Image (tube, one colour):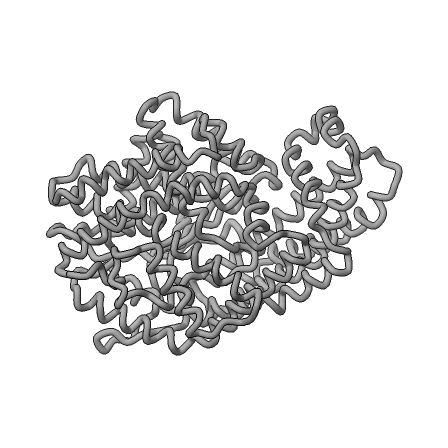
Length: 583
């Protein structure tokens, strides 16, 4: 079976380079500790001390990125691989020392006066300007060295351990569909099957299978969210949401502007869902198991090779640079495409800045949605490509901007398919695009409502499986309204979505909505001025690692605090919905 090639990192767990890199990590860790304990207190000029820190951290983070990705990438496609798990835990074991170094530097930096003048007068510091000022602002949320060290150590046996338990438990879960015992990732993919009864049976089997792991999942979720609440309170944040927004470089005004626009447009998505329900023969809204049901008489299937050709061709029609990137990713085996037992469900892209490459995991199942998913993940990879010349410190970007390039690329492919489609195919493509947008707007909204209420109730006490199911059902009812049949929802959505189980990525829901609406708006700008837009777009992607969201949006003239921009993007989706309602 085709799989990705990770040799650019290490050829195996026995690769001598892996051992060498681990030894180098220890050396750099020692240097970093000496830097905090001695150099910061020494007589060297402030600008030299700041530069030395970022040079050290760039070198250290690059090696840790290689080691961590090697373990995580292997583990994601083989969750029974004990060597991969051991490497992941080894890398996580460096966190306590890194935490002390980072905290020590930020606390010292917080006491430096006239920092802007120092940066402006030192050319070598210019690439790090945003990171330096951001680190200074974060200093006020730092705890004592002893507390930071304790939190970092306990996290490895706390939220990190719970997260790995949930991931492995879910990845090894199976369900029986029509007498076949299937991995849960394949069972979930049957939601796209042409056979309506098979979709229903798969949905019922999926829900039944979660009963075998719901107690474990609830324990993991309660533990992780409980830890997040405690950490947020101790650091002085008003809530986990405020902590998330700070980490996401996003302000409350931007989130409020987006949510205002989303709530206004929910009725249009509900009209789409009711229309789809009628087309599928349902009288009281769409049952959850038919959310992804194919519409129309055209069965748009693709082999993996056809999907590659389609994506490369249409990416190239946007720009040869994007097309060449996709071609390279496929030819160099950067993609692990097919589902298998023990492989995590879903899809993701891991940008590995230290080697200027990306790796993409998918669960390709030969339908058009899988083609869109590949395009989406390649968009993430292209985002990393635009950042490849940045220093390691600026290679990371906040969650809300993480979906910009991915959804933009997905839109390229969807619109290209629509432009060459027959009328019957057009119905399929338009519905697929609306279905995807519905997930990113409406379902994401339900997950945001769920997580908001989860944090509220978890701050009082742990929640039972029944209480978590009720929270999820209430959130789905509020978001979907009468668009879904309330007798056929998905109470266990909190079990199967991995984003809930990371202490680092709370509220990993609204960033998807932001990414969709921002990408839609950007695509509209591209259509208005194709030649002039492309370099501006690449400039925007490059800026995501060293700016806050408000300033990134200003590059293309967008006011992040105005609901009007988000309304305009939603209006583009509404036009597709209005067209679909005429069929």
